[in-house]
Image 1 (cartoon, rainbow, N blue to C red):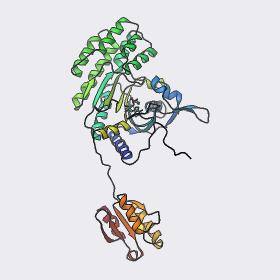
Image 2 (image 1 turned 60 degrees about the horizontal axis):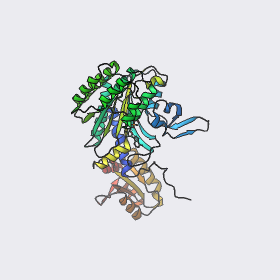
Image 3 (image 1 turned 135 degrees about the vertical axis):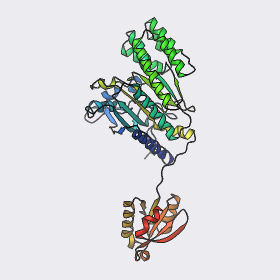
Image 4 (image 1 turned 90 degrees about the horizontal axis):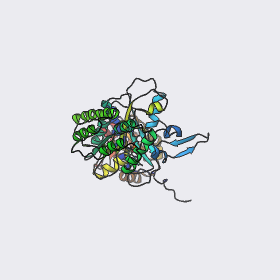
Length: 424
Ligand code: HAM
């Protein structure tokens, strides 16, 4: 037999790495709780039509697609947003708005594997559905900021832009949606010359060029310059006003590092308003990103419903923590191994293990049938805190030997006092 490896672009997470993921997901879940987001769990496999509807060419090209045995075209989810939009048009259709929904888990994209880029990766995902207000946009950015700080990241910064402004300009000149999406794809790839070539109208090209070339000292200056280009674009003017309000809310309520980039675009097609990404200086790939998508839910047959959301790449956040030397501690419980000295006391030892667990003590039972010395050596190696040694002599006095493997002390303890002795 060959020796099997994970499929290209997919990883086993072991030890510290697995702990880092648990740590990040736990913090994301706590953030969800603090910001009022409730957790939903959706399937990894969805219909291809749903996943490809508005995700954009780049994601469509990179999905893991297959036919199930019932001849249905399905795919592994490349993100959470489409599944959440589906939920909002079905099971959650009649729920009062706003809805705040949190999810986490693996997603799949056939990207070219490299550092921080995998084919199976983890996201924590937040969607705030039902509000078209800048407050909602600000909440999504602020919760990302909260999570990054709370994880212990020291240096990170936000890049913010508005697809609403760009689409507003393109709409005013009657540019169809497909061309708009192509323009935005090219802008996302920083191929601005090719993007401008798709725009027929001279006036529109000049306005876009103006936006692209804006250099501001700070976001306030940039936004004023943006406004100066948009006098004749009503829709874009509203979008830039919204962006202004959002940025005011964000910067006045917290200390945050951000730059406003008028020509910033993202790969996903469904965005209609504010967009953002978060970076650390040591990596040129985003740790997270998101934005406003006001038309996706109606595309799936729902009522017109404004929405904004974001996802954080857990693999990349773990990498960022490692790069910045951020240490974290998972609350480690005191672990205990229960070792019967002889077969005669095995059942009794088993019962003791069960009753310790019922009292909240984490217990491993010696399942290898090893002699006590060997079992203790193994517990030592795996940094287990205590051994409960069950012997016939002690059991006659309703007691066991409790061995503190860290301090190398041992004493006889009655079964009645065992939990208390371990916990203290
Ligand atoms: P996204 O920017 O495609 O947005 O992905 C979010 C994050 O997932 C990225 O910032 C990055 O950290 C991580 N990520 C993306 N591709 C990879 C990869 N190949 N390997 C490792 N990490 C990766 C979305 O997915 C949107 N659904 C976010 C959103 C929610 N917008 C509105 N609501």
